[in-house]
Length: 88
Image 1 (cartoon, rainbow, N blue to C red):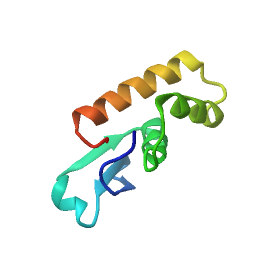
Image 2: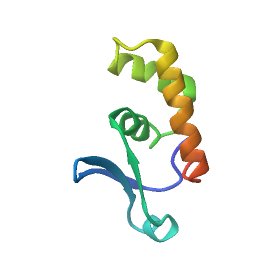
Image 3: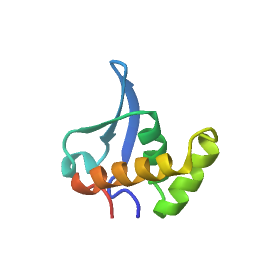
Image 4: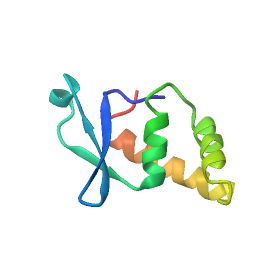
């Protein structure tokens, strides 16, 4: 899976947000707000990647975090992105 649209991630008023840019701004109106873990996942989704690879990459970024928690974080965030229709 990967992102359907080209997004940039920025800090706005203390929150991390992703906004579609270029021609994709007309296709996806609005923005996505996320925490730091969500931002890491979002960056990885710019290229084709599996849920398992997302978890493994997060394990390297957050080695102190239990794998089960990372799996739940990935599942939850990916579900929200699917609902927002931004994943292929």
